[in-house]
Length: 294
Image (cartoon, rainbow, N blue to C red; front, top):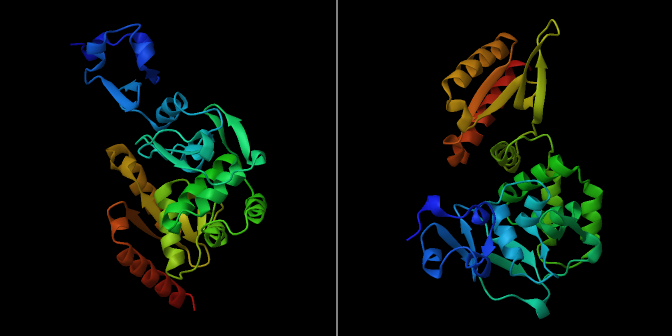
């Protein structure tokens, strides 16, 4: 049996067909655990990223296939879909065999809504935003839209034009509420989720990525979310903050913000699993700050 180190260089880093593999290794070797079967007669060595899954899908999809949803988002440069199946639109006449690799839709996509990417045909930013905005809970859709707008600069009016061209499409009523919550300044999915949680609770909308200066005009810090009129800020503490050196920098930064007269609270990924507690804590904080300035 082949070991990982015995995988030919030509079979590393990209999906390949069984036919390609059998030019280099035996059928017995291809059954080794090193070779991950992604779909019928298509393999990959290692753990595939979503882009690898798209390339694998392209080996079995017809030329008419168009990447949509999360896969179109990936093709447009926003890599937020590693564990998801490849989302693709295929005309009914060309439907591929069922596969765990694919999530197939036959929903109408106009040719004017399709562009060519490094991953093949995909919906353009406007149509991709329209599709993502219809994906259920704003906690899911808005972070994706934030990232898409930040990456591509797609404008709301172009998304609304797509919506107008598809009257009566399923879940179209979700589009406007999702677009109302979009903020391209958001820099992470969880930061976006936190902002959406606060909006859903009826709290005042914060400013994203606010630059803060002290009374002498010297730059102090840029904070994730803030209410400038109340001098209240929220920082999201992601996984990288666990690094000791980063922790020391964060502590110095928080001290500087507090010295500049700001109230700062830090929300981490564990707290985000208790959204009601987070919302109530911030609600009380804003009320206290507002009363102090009354």
